[in-house]
Image (cartoon, rainbow, N blue to C red; front, side, top):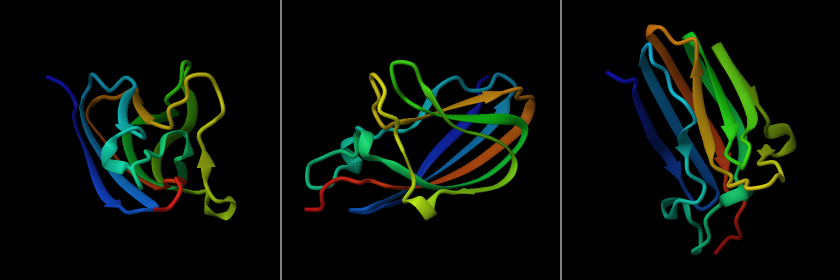
Length: 135
């Protein structure tokens, strides 16, 4: 068996992107699962994908029985947040967290779970801005 994970796009407009991720673990966990593909054509604005221009403005989470690690995809992934319990991280005051300027950065976001037992759950909502030129 494997974890049951779903990624739902809640909003995908010219500026904003909101994604909800849920995971119910069977105890095996997730390793670097791409939950936001910043190079996906579905998220393009005026023919341009957000890529490294994607910014995370807010993270709301409810994680029980495990730890959820979010990372920016790059040649060597860079930590974005480590989540456990429930709460929110609000980066709107300074326009959001941008993907770091490191080698191979794509702007995509990866999810790894740690210490997951059978029945552990995670719900994560990412509110982002695309930062691409408006059409």
